[in-house]
Length: 606
Ligand code: DGT
Ligand code: MG
Figure 1: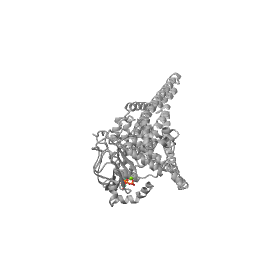
Figure 2: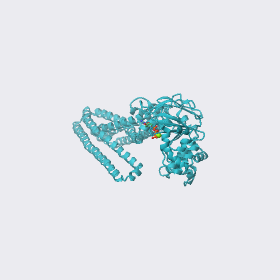
Figure 3: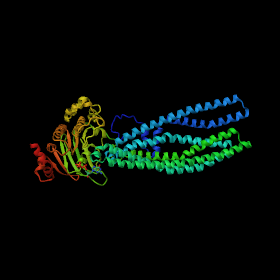
Figure 4: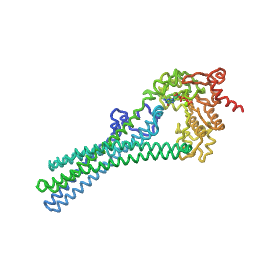
């Protein structure tokens, strides 16, 4: 990753600067991906050396066998024969060693490169701004990390080495055949064009089918993922049978496509075999005649057959290689698309760490839109003193979330400025900015791990004392210690299930642990019972003490306690003031109060 959008100062994964620089470089996506291999220069050269050696040695063996046959026929001498036999054995031992070296080397460098690529890609995805994640489906990202990388892996593993060894084998075998007899050499090369034609035809029919097959497989996978994670909805609406039959339809299609591939393969392979065999027969016939005429030795005839195999083998693989190359190229393109998606919200090259702030927040004529040309916030000007609590109110879609998203710079303003303690948020490092803002999202997300881990998510080195203090403030301590393992209880997949209200308080504790001067909370919807609501409310009140707080709340008590209330309508601040001030005038606040809060007031009075 370039220094620009790395937020964390200490990254857990050491990255190779060169590979990262290349990954950003211009050029064909596949070449950019191969940049990850070049990082292992020594391994690349050694592997190449072994690869060339083993390909060349393989070319020697038929020649040795030829000598054995001819010498045996000529002299019938066991000692000479023995010498050649030892030669054959030696060559195959050395060849074996080279082949081991080559395989090991390839695995070492390919796995190393994939390790680097996965880390780089993962880190890059996590550093991409909110806007990117709003637009991109999770399934798509997962498939970049899995199947696209698998495709590249196949190409790196077999494709590249195959290309080198097949080239050497092909030209070497052709050379040996011509050396033997130019007629046989010509005959051998004569089979190549028809084989190439068939191979390309095969790849042209098989390639797209393979693509389609994989796409279908991806569709099935995403249906599985959706249905398993949404299994409760499926069951609640009694849609099991419907989903099962939908799945069966997709599987049906997969089966049909799979059989299509098999059929194409089954017609195309025998055709290849037929061509190869016809060629072999032709050369065998011609060679036999030459042996009778005394132009060719018996040993040469035998060797020519082996060389012919070496000549046609690579040609038969051409189609396969083309398909593999195309697949890898498509995968590389997908990966590069993600690697190139960095335009919004990048740190300035000269960004500095935001010093410890008091919590003053200023919006200076801010215009903002998620898409170019359309504004969801218009001309917002706001000055918030340290320690002030601001409640944001407004109809759904009026822009409340959008306002608070700008403070930790989840998005960039179109025009105007957002300042924290006088520092433009675009001029400071993202990490130093976000470390000083506690964020409570509308959606309470817990990760697989212990409750303590979840609370300490924003501050990995927090002590147990700090974690407990934050939990107490968030009114979460009492229910946490009721769990079988207290703070060490596992939550998330295969862990215990926590209720919505508990979940929310854990995320409040997470934000409080940062002990940040600024707190932002998107608390607009929460469907919890009165008691939990009360607990969350007191958690929030605790949380806001001594901090600058921005709260989106639908609870009267939060709104009433706020130092200032902003009423938004279609991205514009239409009213601003305290509860009493705003209630005194006939305006949007009074209308919201009458429709939403009046009954809460009665409830509180009781
Ligand atoms: P809520 O949460 O339903 O009470 O609504 P607010 O007040 O939080 O509204 P907000 O800020 O989420 O949305 C303001 C406008 O921006 C609304 O017209 C929807 C639009 N919007 C929100 N998020 C996105 C987004 O990720 N992409 C695009 N293109 N538009 C968005
Ligand atoms: Mg919202």
